[in-house]
Image (cartoon, rainbow, N blue to C red; front, side):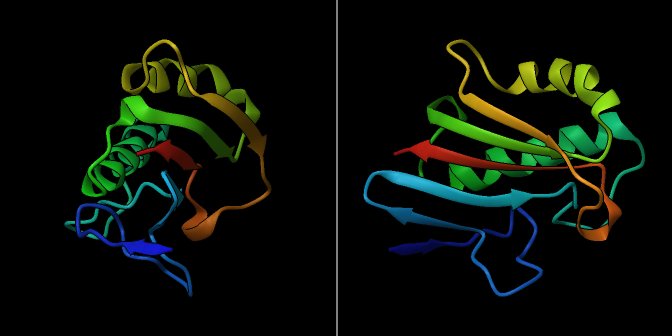
Length: 123
């Protein structure tokens, strides 16, 4: 197993790696919408969704892969009523064939953000 670290995505806020490589797969920890340059969380669902997905993209690219090689995502959201808007923005980052995906409403996320996205990517 090889650890992946980048300053282009938020640092781990606990005892975990940003991502790890095992065989030909990259397992990325959940990315929350923290701007890695400022440490700030943008206001609103659209800005948070874009920041979380940008963090995902940057983390994957730091491992030498492409967001086009994502095979599975898990999206944790605070409110299932936000599902349609998140889907619109999600479709700006991922293209067909889309990765397999799970979407789960949760009671609370780290730093009280609105969503968190984790991925599995083929290298």
